[in-house]
Amino acid sequence: MALSISAVLLLLIVVVLLIRRSGLKTGHAVACTLLGFYLASSSWAPQITDLTNNVAGMISDIKF
Image 1 (cartoon, rainbow, N blue to C red):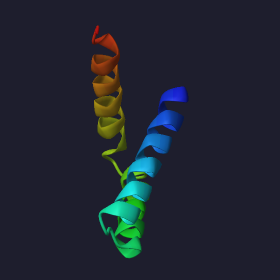
Image 2 (tube, one colour; image 1 turned 180 degrees about the horizontal axis):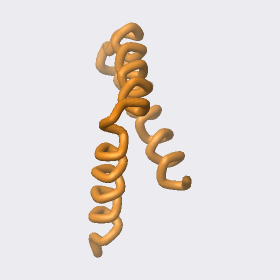
Image 3 (cartoon, rainbow, N blue to C red; image 1 turned 60 degrees about the horizontal axis):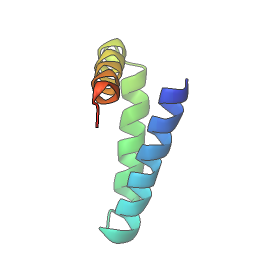
Image 4 (cartoon, rainbow, N blue to C red; image 1 turned 180 degrees about the vertical axis):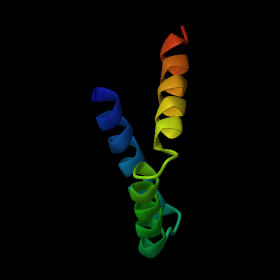
């Protein structure tokens, strides 16, 4: 649960910065959000979740 909350916050910050600084239109951000909701309820959701978890695991294994 902590991973999904932090990922949501990170993505929210990225979208807000894109809207404010890069001229991302609010309509585009809404369309991307709706796409995310539809993907979450699709048959691709388990593969997307596995990919996200694998990438997060690889990032956490990096030693600085």
